[in-house]
Image (cartoon, rainbow, N blue to C red; front, side, top):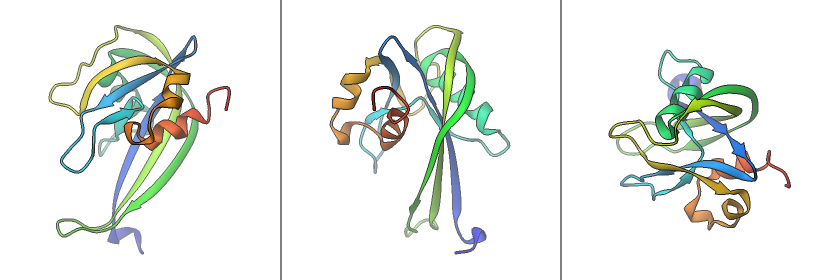
Length: 146
């Protein structure tokens, strides 16, 4: 399929860890998606870089200011067309990050995030697959031990 025949959604996420814990945000859910734990991050605006989106999204969802590190991973998936829109390519990027300031707490208004929490990595790995977004699993491949 030619790139003009589908929509693209870019998303940037950030892996933040501290003393055996990982920072997660709680997605509220939608009419078609159940609530779940996910990585801080989200959609890239039209004229925004992947890096700027990651920094903005982390602040909105967690209250933390960060310094963005290296890209750790990326993946993509495809969503078929529906009655109301064409097919969509979802492209996700996961970056390392370091907290430089701020206070834990969601700052976005009317957003998709309920809250952010530090969760022990072992507890994250033990979450039921239906209660964590698959981008969490992508990020976990970069956390010791594998």
